[in-house]
Image (cartoon, rainbow, N blue to C red; front, top):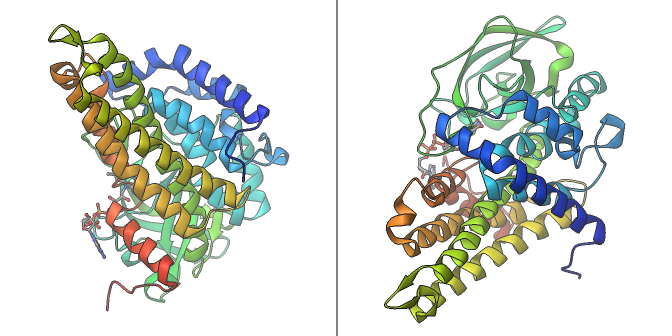
Length: 386
Ligand SMILES: Cc1cc2nc3c(=O)[nH]c(=O)nc-3n(C[C@H](O)[C@H](O)[C@H](O)COP(=O)(O)OP(=O)(O)OC[C@H]3O[C@@H](n4cnc5c(N)ncnc54)[C@H](O)[C@@H]3O)c2cc1C
């Protein structure tokens, strides 16, 4: 067991860190202020630097590296802001991976190289008004009609909605109830019949647009099938990598909060000395650091154990759940340690707290991860319906 990064991994991490800090910080502030997604020109720039295909196979235009390398890059951008990290998250650990793993060759050839070139961003549309945690209650239909699949239904909370060029839409593709009837289809943004609801106004996630997808008999070619009915398990396997990405977004937020507050407490003086000299402050700093390091180890373990494949559900849930919890806590403590300045929008800490809260809901809530963890521990699934 070796906990150090290789020379190549460190070089990739450093180049992502340099670019994210030096170039993206001002852009991130603009996205946050105006609640606008990252413009296409920046996505193209990411592509030129290889950030959108870190762990995609070389045959599809990627760098052919592993999941850990992808997460290293996501963390560096998440430290600046989840909004500037989001396109990398979507490309490297998001729904694109379901296409890479399970779709037929023609769809892969159409989507994967375009994602690596920054031309296409793909979002995932799973949740519905009546199907959140109980996702297998979803009712969106995907009907096979000769050489076409016709999709109808309403999706909720899709991050990237309206901005992303493509959507992995979970839908019911047979009359079998629950998970057995669920498959997934790739739907392009410009297909007739696809519309978007009003932009959501969220507590955080500014710069990551969110809206409903309204699918009214949207026809796509049969080759847009990613997994047929019965493939829900596969979708969840690919989603375990997205959970590690979600953990990494939380980790990036927590790491940045810790770094900023470390600088602040050494500068801020009260009672005639820097507040870092008070033991109550020192204890908080130590507790924050312990949590950040533990979250990183859990996340890296899940990624490394999966190598270039997909992480285990147990390890991914442990990482996501823990990182989600500590990001809220660390950002909250950092805000408190900055006093009134932490609460001010002029500093970045209040944004971190708002963003941190969202990652513990997106991708499956903290509590449902705990149920997954307990299931993994005892080696069985707990039916939430009986
Ligand atoms: C910022 C953000 C981004 C998102 N992005 C996307 C996206 O890109 N694509 C997408 O499809 N969806 C997305 N979502 C939706 C997200 O996946 C759901 O919000 C989440 O799964 C919870 O569903 P819900 O909101 O319907 O809550 P509910 O399922 O109604 O849950 C409400 C509460 O009840 C608890 N609960 C429910 N069932 C159980 C149970 N069996 N045991 C214990 N507790 C339970 C939950 O933990 C939660 O605290 C996003 C959400 C947010 C906030």
